[in-house]
Image (cartoon, rainbow, N blue to C red; front, top):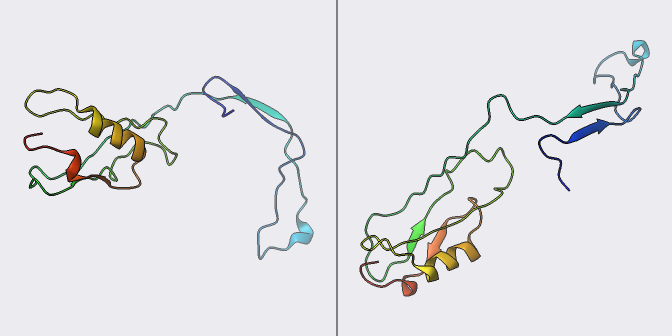
Length: 126
């Protein structure tokens, strides 16, 4: 399991040592090992919050696929997103469109790729 906020993290004794820098006179350098220490994992003083960014055309023809580009989303700290959930609704009725929502959630669960919704899944006006 991955460590989380409030968990303890222990550095084991004699596992990490100093190293003589490249190009230095290492005969004057004594190798020292770190002693054991236990730290509690705390929250960040200035946490990074997710910022979702989706670029998409405002209008497409009835035979065009919809291209949804979320690659500029940020705030995941260089790690994979814990959860990535699409929700698609009709612009007029605000009703959820389960087929498109399910398609996106099954096939596009991160921001590393551009999502493409095939035109065959759409009907005019949605």
